[in-house]
Length: 387
Image (tube, rainbow, N blue to C red; front, side, top):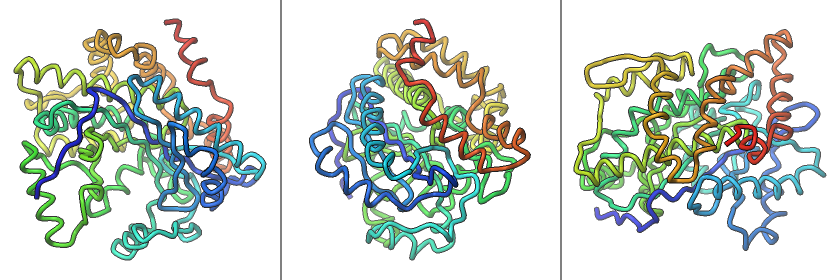
């Protein structure tokens, strides 16, 4: 099977943000996405952003246009959220984002009326119905198809960093899970999700797709749901490993890390240097550690099995790649990673709120609603960094 890889601008950025709809009084998930999307259809058809449905009717996905910078992409996202609020505010519907809803039950949710989603549920059954998960997807343009899998394999070393920074699903169906990112372990139960297979080049990817399509496992490349995957239609590498980010500044910070890493690895290949790669069993162990411990995880950072605190390794990486962040005009967003490490990811904040409220998870939902609505805007956050 021949799978063309589209032409895209090198290190261009696109962002997708899955957002929950919830009743503003009870915090319960609200199945209002179809009417929200219908109300926006005419007003937003000429905008750079899009607002679409997802697997469940309690979710809208907002997507940026293609940005030269992270700031441009996140401006699109902010415009999309503002458009959604013009519809949801009069309905008494609030917006929030995290990897999971703290107390929602799968059997109370409605599946979006789509052949694609009904087919998914029919095949995956209980696990499919349990996909009460929200995430972000960051696309970065790659200028040569031969770079795609070397970069994906190198990015796999940084999966735990991305997962720990975004960890926001410590609760599941009313239970405290003991994991910072329960979502990451739930999502990998889908048959084509989880860690990317350690392929060496594009020809191997085409062979993989040929096998999967020929045996009826999937119809095309869009059904590959790996934590990092190629997006042939867009000419990008897409990072899908992250839990839903609870605030726009955090979303921008993580997107900047993805953009900077992809550009760094692309430059290394241009210089004729081999990219780093660790054993698949180390990648799998790192994913579990980040899911369990979040920013407190120690991760395996090289083929020899050396371990470091994920925050220490991330800070060293940020220092080494600061010049690239500056060239990509995302220095301030990149600096936002330090704020997450210092103040704690969303999972930590949610647990603190739950403890202070005597375990009342409705208070956690209200906290997430407040963060999403009243937290600093991206511009205010960047100004506070003083750069």
